[in-house]
Image (cartoon, rainbow, N blue to C red; front, side, top):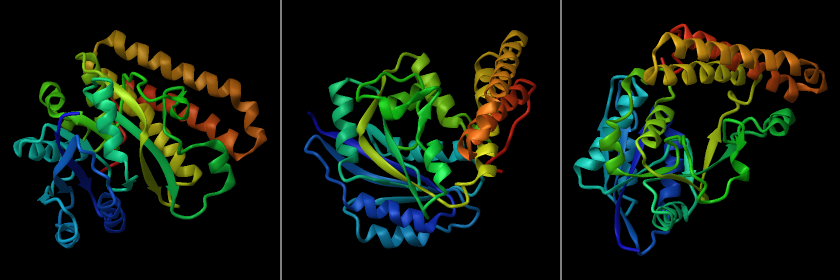
Length: 311
């Protein structure tokens, strides 16, 4: 494997404890001979530079330089663009993106690099596993609500090398050329979320090869505020809305809107058919309600509605 120059890009917003946890994980990375980290780029998406002191302290303990950038205008897509642009401007051939509430396993980057080389991929998506701040209710674990999935496919059953048509920006390695060709994350999603699904979906349509790597693991810290029915239902509605808006960005026609509307109605119908299962407990109830709210989100999005989760 030839030596590959990697920049690690992080976007953060008022998560000091989680950011320190991420840096602690980076300190334990085992870098293979075929790769090197040239720098870590941190974009602070806060109106005040709240992460600056943390980055300054951590820079003294890390073997790689930290480029701290303040991006005070709120917007997750624009902040991601700032991070990747900074990495590219410093000559990085590859960009590894990891979220500020994640912590990499020691072999995280090595596995991403190995998979990229083995499968001649342009993008490699790693595995994200939940780590709960406090033990969640049993129904949360039973329902598997925080196990990462794609559509109806459970990533727990995926094998390394599985081709992807969609990916997320948490735990990913991509060639800088992908960003250049796609044109960056769409600022339309700045306050909505889903900018990464839109970006990597477009990358797949442009012919870039994307694969999954089960060995490249990060743990995502899940706060207790998320392990609740209300949060799960709000996220389901936002997800449904975002899927609709992503599709409308590429096909805004009336026929496209109608198809999304019908799809949303189908999800609601499926939830109604599955409603009797809700009597079996809170986990089945949550699954039924989430399915219905994803359908409502699809319909709302098809009519031009948006749920600004990051506002």
